[in-house]
Image (cartoon, rainbow, N blue to C red):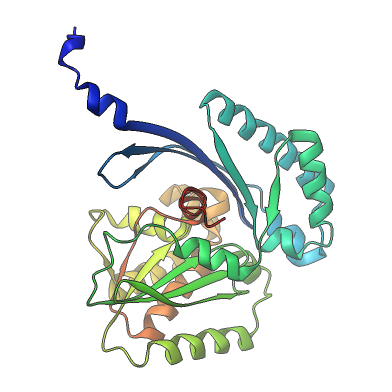
Length: 309
């Protein structure tokens, strides 16, 4: 047993632990991330993921095709939010934010759903626009990846939209959100004009840099990275990602589930997601893509902690 007298009383006093939670209500799934933040005098705050729960409620299928969230999915959302609330209670979370993106902001009953969730589950939801989403994602802590002499294009592919952020000299230069998410692609709702706009934006904003490195976030690129078997600090090359795309595209939806053990709600969206990352690499001239374990939920926690939201 540890002798209490051996514990440094000064260290004990200066060490503080906070528990924050982020709820990301996306177009393909909803996530609850619980993070504990370690504060110690004279040191940088540490963010440690404690729990991540993902619920595959594809709100975008409702919103992008018929324009409203269905009664069935509203009921599923209520149950999920009740569960999230209980999990936050058990974890003794002291502060949380719940943010909804494309699917909720484009559903004509989105605000009505927010009010229902508040009444039935006691969770406050804020529907954010694409610009704010890009800023929050970009606020994720990337300093361990960003080298001051390099240029990075950060790409986050979601179900309803894709966010791009350009970093140079360790600072963000510009961000942009496009209505080009995986669920939209599955429903043939991304026209050539959107592709052209993304290509023009990437080429225009990266042309003055000699070399651009991609940073990818989102469930699909995380899955692709996991399948690669690479170490966390190693990148995937364009050649490797392109070969994976060709391989995945050669399989049927059912084969991706049975042979690769992909979740049913991942097996279809992984194809258009990979296509977006590949095009972003091609248009920016990036040869490699790094995949840190971060996303919108991580950005929410950081933005909340630093008072940005």
